Length: 263
Image (cartoon, rainbow, N blue to C red):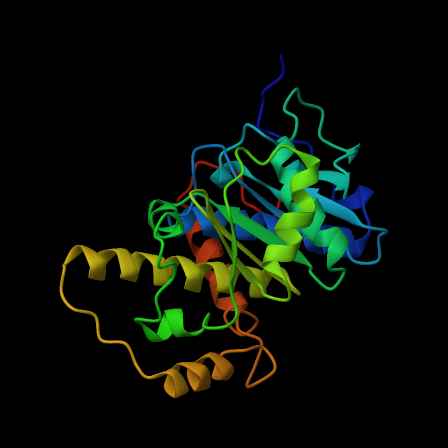
């Protein structure tokens, strides 16, 4: 069995667009790890390869997020067929293309999908009340988040239509008793939405644990605040923030024993 994580660089073997997508996606994996949103080797982040016919990039099933590099990502289609992967015995997780492939196929404008199993995300996913608009961060999602009831491990293709229907036009989904999912037109936008959703869940768990009475703004304020954070209102959140995120990763790369994400 070959489980080496020192993968051959493939920058010169793919198009410039694919390489850019690989580097951005590998950075997103590192950021999810940086902000403590990982679950051992589980979960996935997928990105559409620009200019391709529904070709996606996904992680090898067996790597830590902090081990993911641009050259280690697997190229698949939306049905989960592997088009290319590194020379390794690691494969891909079925749930990765059942959940992600369905969204990419149904919504061609989606460039990236992120799914997590965080402690706070799972906690809120099990609350009947769902995500409460008790912080400015959470108010972003008022009227802009879907809920998908738990059906067991997401390995059955017939669940795909229900996931897509429950997500609807939104960029965020709470999967009941499971975890969180976000998507976006780009990798930076999908990451920012997940960061904000995770922060909202952590704040809610902390506030509810205090057993203090929660103060929620009136409906008109919630609606206005949610509108102000939508991509077309002021700016697509995540794009301005992304270069700073990459600088953060680059500054830390020299102190890490793992390969740089851009390899």
